[in-house]
Amino acid sequence: MKFHHVFHTYSAKTPYQFEALRDVNLTLQEGTITAIVGHTGSGKSTLVQHLNALLVPTEGTLKVAGITIEAKKTPKAVKQLRQYAGLVFQFPEYQLFEETVEHDVMFGPLNFGCTKEDAKKRAHEALTRVGLDASFYARSPFELSGGERRRVAIAGILAIQPKVLVLDEPTAGLDPQGAKAMMKLFSQLHQQGMTILLVTHDMELVYEYATHVVVMKEGRVLTHVPTSTFFETPIEGYDLRLPPLVRVIQALKKKGIHVPYERVKDVTALVNYLKDIQRWPA
Ligand SMILES: Nc1ncnc2c1ncn2[C@@H]1O[C@H](COP(=O)(O)OP(=O)(O)OP(=O)(O)O)[C@@H](O)[C@H]1O
Ligand SMILES: [Mg+2]
Image 1 (cartoon, helix red, strand yellow):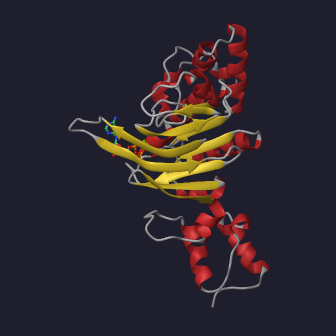
Image 2: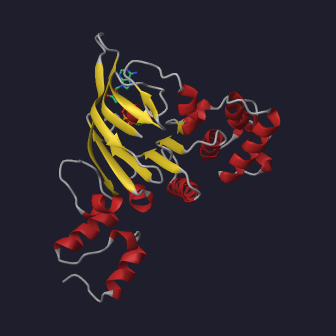
């Protein structure tokens, strides 16, 4: 997935004109869990909606799954793009509209030409993958909890069997436990070979789960690095609130104690690591 000098201007030539992406150059590799972070309004949702041509550049080009997306043109292979990169929106629960969970998840596969039987099979598989058992099939999406609804929406995308799963704020509004369970699910999908791209504000989840980080600011990509590089070399000007654990690790670094990011993902691991190397800060 490659962005080449991509600009996106909303409502061009009107009083509401807004340049939401400015000269974005970015290559996203398959096989990663990439987190896209940045302040509200920095262009994250706009960026990810380009991956399956929900939005097209107003300038520049994009290459996704071998298909070139040109400025201001809806690509012919739009169906292929939608199948390659499945997008789960910010607040996906508003996307649910069928009468039962099963029918909702079958919608995508049916739309992509599966038989009813095949769509049902895929729906059941996808629901199992997101941790919803057969007791959910006949229920109405509207009588589920927020977290369950979100799982249904994700299953609806998984049933299309995309190569890349794009999630816009998948943990927003969930309690810490719910958010963690959701991230564990993405981690499992990643281990099964899925590429994951997620927009998030939660730096703690980024620390724990992402392999790469993209930072956006005012429509531009400030940086795109492996997560270890991102947390080990703090760069001023990102204006991001780092998780407490990371702040402790960075303070230790200033005292000459280097804590490797890969080995220390929570407080217990940090304590054990410091015990192991028999060093406590003076
Ligand atoms: N349809 C639209 N018309 C005009 N401006 C828009 C439209 N959609 C988004 N924008 C503007 O483009 C900018 C980027 O929006 P975007 O939704 O990509 O930000 P974001 O980084 O996803 O923010 P958040 O973290 O709040 O979801 C914002 O300033 C927003 O107001
Ligand atoms: Mg957004």
